[in-house]
Length: 157
View 1 (cartoon, rainbow, N blue to C red):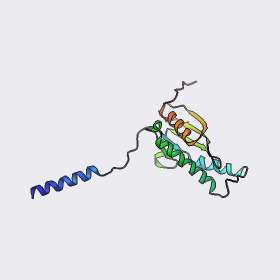
View 2 (tube, rainbow, N blue to C red; view 1 turned 90 degrees about the horizontal axis):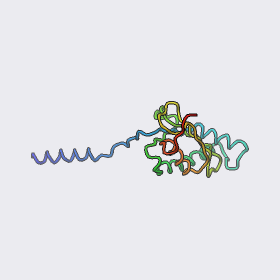
View 3 (cartoon, rainbow, N blue to C red; view 1 turned 180 degrees about the vertical axis):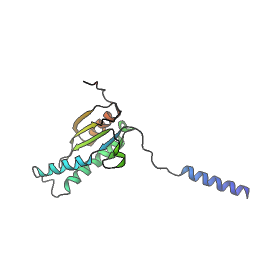
View 4 (cartoon, one colour; view 1 turned 120 degrees about the vertical axis):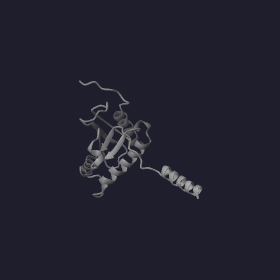
């Protein structure tokens, strides 16, 4: 009986220890992907001039979501992005972020314009404002290099 109780306690202990835990959010720079800007920019791009790629009211959102999904793939696989946390706007986690990423998504985008703005409360060394134009892979690498301070350091003017 004594061995049966020890075996049961061991099984319980092993099952508790081996149970998968919730993924831990790393404590690196937090970048909010500004969906309000992204969707609004795409909506305006679809209206003026009217693009054949924007056939319905849901098309701008489709283009943004599709581009963001590709971007997320490269954010998740680029080693430069280690320790950078990305969140969507309008979540509790976005309340205290270090950088704001805005995408200028056009209809049928292969590459888009982007800008990254550092917030006044950020303590990360990245530049205050950066911008560029590129594919999801190029944007992921550039944004993560800025957010982690792996790029150049800028002296105040």
